[in-house]
Image 1 (tube, one colour):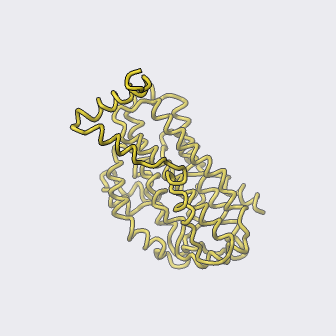
Image 2 (spheres, rainbow, N blue to C red):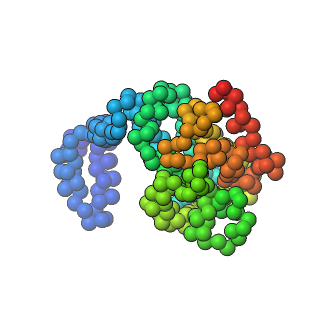
Image 3 (tube, rainbow, N blue to C red):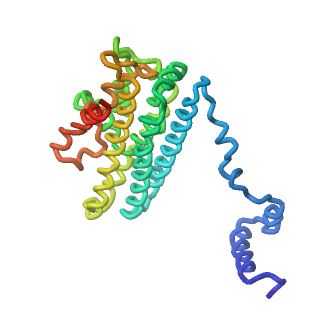
Length: 321
C-alpha cells in the first residue's frame, strides 16, 4: 500500500490531479482547503433555520400561519416544475425518454399539489380565514409569477391569449401584443366596474417586462416546441401523448378546480358572493369551462375541446352543498 493510502484513495487523488493540473490549478491547495472545511450538516445544507423563519403573519389568528406555509410549499413545487421545464428546454439533444422522464416529474408535482389542496379547502377554520384575509389585501395567489412562467414554458404563448381575442389577434402578433391580451387579465378585474384591480396593476408593474422576456426566451423551446422537434414516431408514442394530456388537465382543469372549490367554500354565501382578497372575479376566472385554456389543443378531439371543464364545476357545487 503506497504511502499508506488505500488504492481507492490513490485512485481518487489521480483523478483529481487529472482534473485540476490541466487547468493550472494547485491540487495541494484545494486539498488543504478541504482539510479546513467543516463537515456539512443537513440543517446548514437546506438552510433550515432560515426556511423556518420565513412565516411572518400579519395577524394573531392561528390559521394564518397554515395559510402562509401552504402557499410557500406551493411555490417550492412550482420551482421544481420550472427546473424540469428548464432541463427540457435547454437539452440540445433531447430524446423522447428524457422528455417523458421530466414530464412525469412535473405531473407528479402537480398531482401532489392537487391532492394536498384539501389543506385549503377543508383544513382551515372558515371563520378564521374570513378574519385574517382582510389583512392580506390586495395580495392574491393570482400574483404567483412562477405559475405564469410554468404556463408560458408549457405551450405556445398564443394558447394563453384570452379565448375571445385569439382569432382577432392574428398570426403575426408580437409577444407584447399577446401578453396584452393574456387570459388572466380577465380574471383580475373589478366585478362591479370592469376596471383592473390593484392586484393586477401591481403584478403588471413588477412582472410584465420580465414575463415578455421569458416568453421570448421560450418561444422556440417551450414544451410544445420541443415536442414538435421529436421524431414523428416519438410524437405518436401513446405514453408521451398521455403525459402531455395529463399535464394539460392538471394545470388547466384540476388545479384551478381545487381553487374554485376553496373559493366556493369560503366565499360563496348565498345570496351574496364575497370578493376575493385581490378583488379578482373568481366566479369567471377559476372555472375551466369559462377560460377554456388548453396547452395542447391538437391532442384533444373537437368534442373534448368544446366540453372542456364541462360538468366539473356543477359537481363541485353539489359536493359543497
